[in-house]
Image 1 (spheres, rainbow, N blue to C red):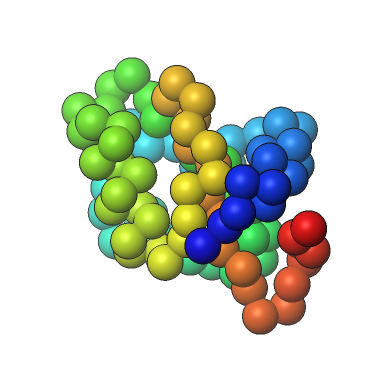
Image 2: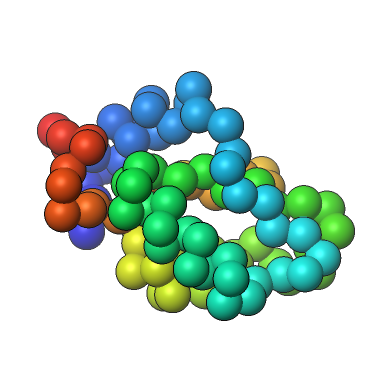
Length: 95
């Protein structure tokens, strides 16, 4: 569980990042979950953009993505989600 201070730090790192995943009309599927897991292992912090064509509610997307990837929500702004999962080889040192 991330503390408020840790979330603030991760949000500050995510500001300069671009969304590397987009969820659109295809919604959520196993390929997306697999790709997210690999990205989280590599980067630890991932930004996801939810397109207007997506029919699934953003709160449901957050719940499903976090559950399938064992990650934590850092931030939700509009249609953008930032998630974090600590990897074995830590790249981000949390305060």
